[in-house]
Amino acid sequence: MMSLELLISTMHKSTDEVLRMLRQSNVKCDVLVVVQCDTENYVELDNGGQSIRVIFTKERGLSKSRNLCLKYCSSKYAYIMDDDVLLDINAIEELVKKMEVDDVDLATCKYIRENGKYPKRYLEAEFSHTLLSAAQVSSIEICFKVDVIRNLGIKFDERFGLGTNLPSGEEYIFLTDCIKKGLNVRYYPILIGVHPEFTSGLDFYTKTNKIIAKREMFKRIFGKNYIFFIIAFWLKKFHIAFKAGYGLRFTQAILFGK
Image 1 (cartoon, rainbow, N blue to C red):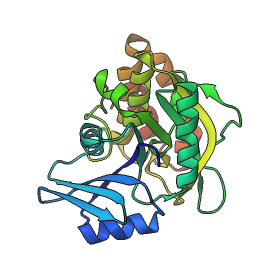
Image 2: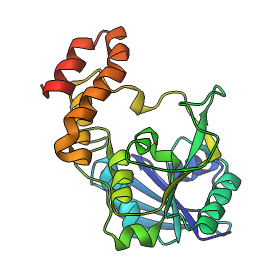
Image 3: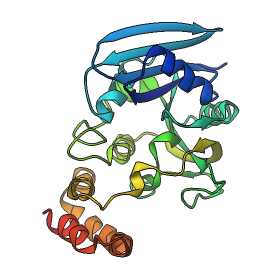
Image 4: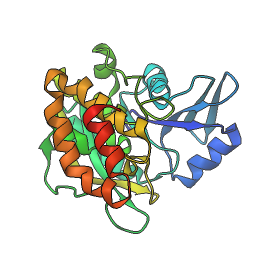
């Protein structure tokens, strides 16, 4: 097994529940789990040669959890994973081998839903990511070289993500920070696993803070040119919000920040 650790963020789980979760996810490599709960603790488990480390923390927020994973990860490569993914570890190993051969710092891939359909349109050819293509990436599609990320001081922006007032955008900001730092960020059409039907990213319009998060995300990434990307996002997504009955709220929040 190559030097790979899965990084999982979850909430309110006991050690037994973490083990049950990992068995259900078909995980067979080393794992670092951060559990946000009401206690502080650290547990190391040996599951037949599989290293499982669990950090229990009182901190809240998905980006804070991801950053704890970044801080304590002990492998050469790390793969970000949710607590409800059925993983194909052979596919992850294939992804890491590609990264080794191509000297890639961060790679993205693809997953499928339980109904057998893809959540988005994936290309079937490899390509290097840009600031625009990175917008299509979900957190469970990301694998990276740990030391490269650490040495450049790249972290998840803790103002963004679930558990904050800006409950999305953290993975896009993370990826674009990597690209801006000159890292080799590449997509491979490798299917890594299965995710449940619903993902939080599908709902970007039902609450004002969800919409504002997109606006602030564009400001964070594109600086003074952010307004062009906000308008483009509004044009692309308005029909979805309008059809769901949130057209006015979406327009007011994304274009005017209120």
